[in-house]
Each structure stands twice: as structure tokens, then as C-alpha cells.
Amino acid sequence: MKVKPLISVLMTSYNREEYIGEAIESVLASTYENFELIVVDDKSNDGTVQTAKTYAAIDNRVKVFENEVNLGDYPNRNKAATFATGKYIKYLDSDDIIYPHGLEVMVSCMERFPSAGFGLSSKGEVKKPYPVLLSSAEAYREHFSGFGHFDRAPGSSIIRLDAFNSVGGFSGKRMIGDNELWFILARNFPMVKFTRDLVWDRVHSGQESKTVYARKYDQLRHAVIYEALTHKACPLDEKLRSDILRRLRTAKLKRLVKRIFKL
Image 1 (cartoon, rainbow, N blue to C red):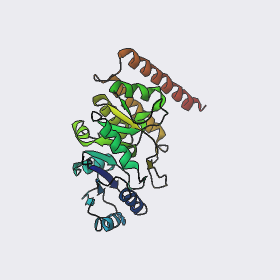
Image 2: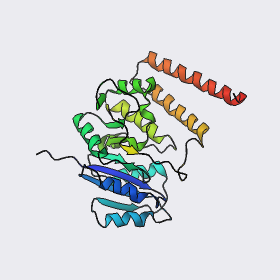
Image 3: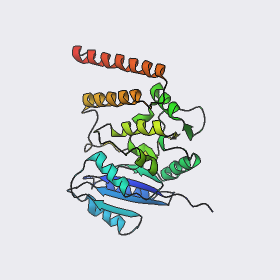
Image 4: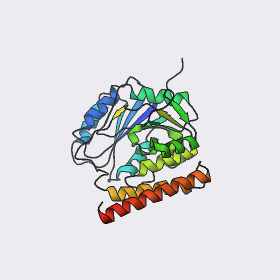
């Protein structure tokens, strides 16, 4: 009988006392049982750690670590990955919920395509059933054709741990570190896309909203895309890269004109 691979669910937290219990319980309710849940708290000053430890006391698959200093979002995600012992890592934010079948679907999709370095839930419709394996070039082309694969949040992903480590994890760039990582992984490994709605992303007032920093986020995102398209290992041919860059420059100019004239 084939042993199901271990998946490390990585839950970083900071002042999520109100929500982390639900997040942990959603993982424990998974139909896929060969997991470890690693909670890494980033110096919370509320009851987040105490809540997490109550679950660790009753289920040895839950492990809780506390940072001595606040690292920030992406550095803490990288630290969480250093504790992982699974074949795959799967981020779940401490205010979100994964549906019972979520881990099972993600792991089975990755196991079906061993060459894939990572998988993302799809935003668009596909012409054949999920899961779908995409080459590096196909993943890039679909992203820029409107699928927006690389705009997905970490909770939408599953990553082979060795692939994550081989590219150095998250760079630490604020707000767009996840988008950047998908571009980097996709140019180095095939990607699996699977069905959407495996995780519920909670929206609440305690989050840092990208809309609040819309202009800064737009600038950072444009820089990440430019870097991905001009990288020597970009899987797209030169003509397609040039066409995409031209469209991006035109769109950027239009946004600038609208801001100047407040259209």
C-alpha cells in the first residue's frame, strides 16, 4: 500500500486571537490526515499563542513556535518553511479556513504530476478537467492572457518543499512577495492548476489592504512583472515578451493620465 506523502501546513500568525482557533480546526478537520500543522507566531501581544498551544496539547500534529522578535510577513513565512518536514508545504493564514477536502485535492494533484514544482488554484475556466499540468511557457502565457495565475495569494498554493528551497523562498518584498515567487517557480518548474474554492479567504478590518496602498502596490507589481519578463530565463519568446511589455507600458501610461487629470 502506497504511503501518502506528508504535507506541512504552515500557519504564520500575528495578533489573530479571534480567528486562529477556527483556522486550526479547519486543518484538523481535513479528510487528508498525513499532515503536520506548524504555527509560527510573530511576537503577538494577544492570546494567539495560548490559543494555538491548546490545540498542540491535544493533537501532536500541531507544533507551535514563537519568534523572539517580529520578523514581518514574508520573512516569517520563510522561517515557517525551515520547520517543515513534509514533501509539500501549504500556507494557510491564521485568519482563513481550508475546506475539509482541500488538502486531499491539492496533494493528489501534485502526486499525479511529479515534475510539478508547485500548484495554484485556477481563476479562470479551462477546456479540460482539473488538474492541468502547465509547462513554464504555458503558465506564463496563460497568466498574461487573463488567467492571472500569479496574482494568487499564498493560501491558493501548494509547493514542493525542495522546489521552494531551491529558489530561496520569498524574497521579502512587501505586498508582492507571493506574486514574485510564482513567477520564479514557474520559470524553473512546471505548474499544476487545480480547482478553485479550496480555501476561504476571510476579509476583515485587521488586514493590511492592498487597496489602501493601491498606487504603491501597482508600482511594485509592475516592477515584478518587468523583472520576470526581462529575466534571461523567461520562458516566453522575445516577440511575445515585447508585446506584453508594450501593453503594460500603455496601461501604465493610461493610469497615470487618469490620476493627473482625475478622469
